[in-house]
Image 1 (cartoon, rainbow, N blue to C red):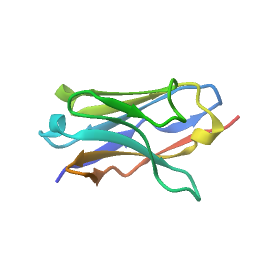
Image 2 (image 1 turned 90 degrees about the vertical axis):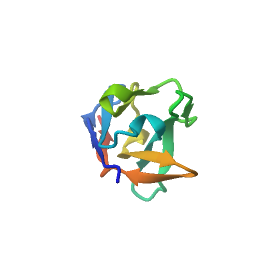
Image 3 (image 1 turned 45 degrees about the horizontal axis):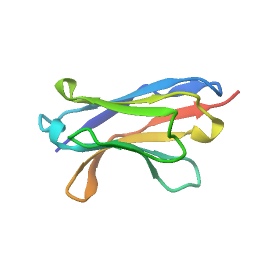
Length: 116
């Protein structure tokens, strides 16, 4: 069972930056596709960014050019660097591990609030 623990959320002003981290317990971390998702109140959970075991990266259009996903397989950790944050980025952010065709393990989430 893969356990994921996110950290790094908080309150930031518009235009500010945050870096989220997600530490995985599994020694097989390097073989997983890792994704950052977010869910705002009243909205469905959406995939923000993902990175495969081979390093292929995907971003949602809403965050392209502002967010950067990366991974450190030696530390079993995936990161999400968020710059130029907007109020509409406010959400609970979750990291998840995918194997097969779906995300099968999820973290508990970390709150990101962007407010003046």
